Length: 323
Ligand code: HSE
Image (cartoon, rainbow, N blue to C red; front, side):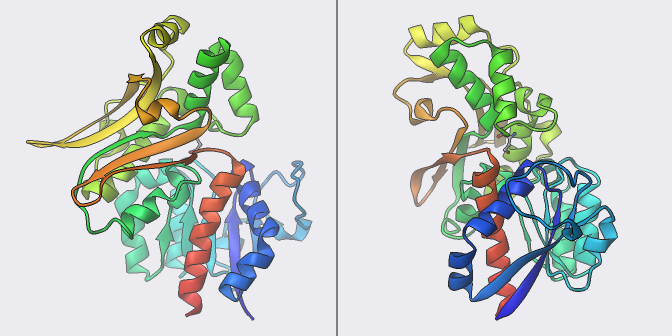
């Protein structure tokens, strides 16, 4: 059986979820692909961290080049988070002929052309499904099954942490700080949750969606962005009294003279489908000129849902290179 060797950069929450997804479903993945997928090297400093997966100590290294330049490795999974050194590591991996999978929305949004151009120049595949909507296969759908469409609008709840906070504040009347701590404990939040609560994480994801849906590069810092730190319990109670909810909504739509885009907390009427998207769930609405309205719904954060998306990309690449 052909073996595909994988190098993992970062084994925190999502790295562990990715490793676990492969271990948990190894039999079925092997049967479906006819391939043996093996995570052979892991770049990670925190070797002692308690993880509920079995990793042998010799799989770990603290030397980036030992993974990025290992001639035996076919695919690199980048799960370090942050723009650097993640971007440089991905570029080095591509220059060394490795296919790259990442969940890193900050790096993809900041360096979209650089990364996609490098993949083309080095004849390798680059996939980043897990960077938007966690386990929801939205990028895959947009770039395959929906290719026949021209899009008019995207509307989405794209951050699990803030949706969890807004849900628990509304449903249980719990204070913001308390619920944020819980979202961090559940592994939804970024290492620095400022990116979540200030809306920057959503701006990164919207920037990636705009590139794919409208074929236009809008850097995240050019997207007018407001997070949920200004949303008070009074706002939430008023929204409930008016029959709706406050949700952090990402919007991009075609207008007569171009594109309109922003990220901000919005009052959503109770009868709108987005009002029913709660906790760490995400949802993305798209409107195509042929397909009309579609809504994608699923867990937008968390180790296993994100691990599922990462492994989906890895399997797709493994199949392509084994042909
Ligand atoms: N911190 C992100 C969120 C993780 O809460 O949605 C998934 O991108």
